Image 1 (tube, rainbow, N blue to C red):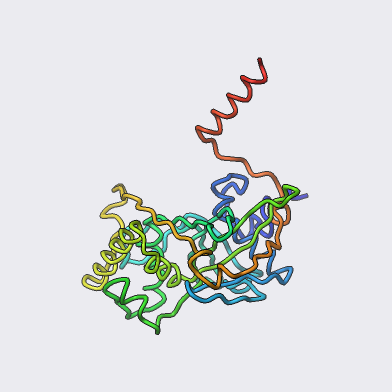
Image 2 (spheres, helix red, strand yellow):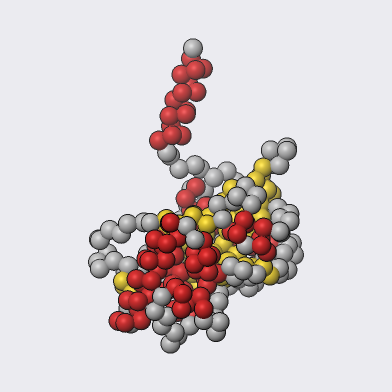
Length: 279
């Protein structure tokens, strides 16, 4: 008898051998069980290009049944992109791999916050766009988002979660295109987005002038991680007006307990509670 998998639809045969019961691994993979559950139960998953929202009865990544393979923390290997950072999710179908960013976000209505790191928006997302659009070499972000001929692909999976009045945890999902992520940064008009745009422009300028984009000069080098904060549910009318239904419960897709990663504050809280119990 085989043991029950931790996450819906993920098995040793179709997923990486990493510990699915680890919080870090489960967090990265969680949008995939949601999409597989949505596919099996004909639940609509909206796809957004940063301005418009498209609802679909099938997951925007295409069917996830059959010979799909899933992995985490995989770089997109290409000699034009030097020492690329790993991507959250790698999906391989018929020998072709596609790469995705995974975000698990607390739903706060129109104030829902999406935080992206530099390795995502100024490298992996750009690599995705440039790989899907051979021959395109936009010199900066303004030129990129102004090009209406770009092919856009699903890229960022934002899994929203909240608790209902009975403390059940329920989920919904939006998938943003790669160009859509960059459109949101270009339109954010905040001090951090201005810094992010400068980093994106530097990467695009390097690619357009040299034919290469360098994340690290060598694998052992370190890179700062500038973050940008976006509010997609407030700033995108199609999302701000959407009535999210949260059709999936956590118990639908998380089949066994996930082990929390150890953190300082978790341990401090545990020590405080134990001390109070001893009084």
